[in-house]
Image 1 (tube, one colour):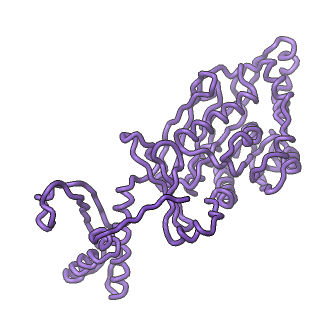
Image 2 (cartoon, helix red, strand yellow; image 1 turned 180 degrees about the vertical axis):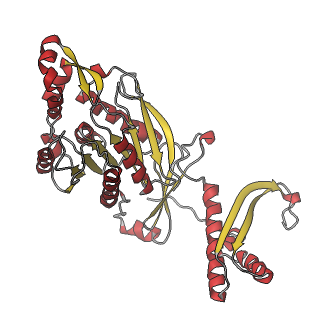
Image 3 (cartoon, one colour; image 1 turned 135 degrees about the horizontal axis):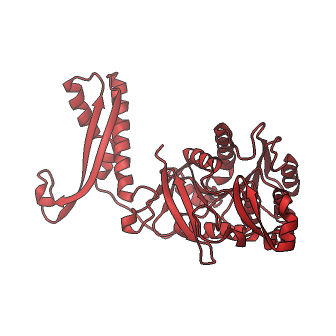
Length: 407
C-alpha cells in the first residue's frame, strides 16, 4: 500500500507552532489522533510503528510533538498536563478544519491519560484507546521522586528521564495533583479499549484496572503479555495496531441511515458527503468507502482522487472486468490485464471519428495491456470486447441525469 507521509503544523492556541506528521493510506476510512508518552516525541518507535500499521488497515494517523518537545515550539518547563490536553484539542481542531475530525483517539502512557481527558471535547470522536496509561496524571510523580523535595523548595529542578534532562517546575506538580480522571471516565460516552502489559514497570497493571472500573461500557481490555512500557519489540506495536484496527472498525464504519425512505433511495447506489474543509468528499457504496478531493494546486487537500480520476477508474475497472469475464468464458490464456487511461480535452476538428466539429470535446485515451499466450486474433477480439464494457457504453451513449433536492 502506498502510504503518504506529510509534515503538518498547527498553532496550539498560545501562539506556538506544534510539529506533526500525517500518515495516510490512499483512501482513509477514518482519521486518528495519536498522543505520545511523557517527554517522548511523535517519532518514538512505538508511535511510528502503530501509525504505519493502522495506515495499512485504512486508518490515517496524525501524531504530533507536545509543546516544547521534539520539533514543536515552546518551553517544556512551562507545560503541564492541562496544556497537553489543550494541545490535543488544538490538534483535533486543526484536523477538523484541514482534514477530517479524528474519530479515534489513541494515547500512550501519560498521552493515554491526556486523550481520556480530551475525548469529551472532540465531539466527532467515536472511540478511544490507551496503551500503558495511568488512571491519574499524578501517577507520573514517581518518576520525579528523587527531585520532589527540590522542586517543592526551590520551585524547579532538573530531572533526568530516559537519559535526557528536563526542567520540571512546581506548577507542573500542582497541575497533575489537581487532575482527576474518574469523573471524566464515567461520562466518556465513547467506546474504550485499554492495552496494558502485566509486567509494565513504569505504569503498573493496576492502573489499567482503575481505568476499566471507572469507565462504562462499551469497554475492553487487552493484555500485552510480556511487552515493556515503550513497546520496544516491533511485533508488540504491530499487534496493538492489528487488534486496535479490528476493534475500532465496529465504531468507525459509517453509521447506517435510520430513515427507511432515504435508505430505499440510496440502496444499490452511491452516497457522497463532505468529509472535511474545501473539497474533500466521502463516497460510500454499500460497506465501501472512497475519498475524493482536488490536488493542492487547486486548493484541495489531495486526500483522494479527483472526480475525473474516479471517472477514468470506473472505465478502467469495467474494461478489465469485462475482458476477464470474456476470456474466462472462452477459456483463453489471459493471465493479466492492465488498463492505462488519460483524460483531456481536444479540438473537435482534430477528432476524425467524432460527429461534433466545433469547439472542444472530452477525450479519454485507453491503453490496454494483455499478458498471456494469446494469438493475434484473440488479442484483437479482446480489444473489440473492451468497447462493449457497460461503463464504456454508458459514457458513449445519451445520458439523462435527474436532480432534485433532498428533504
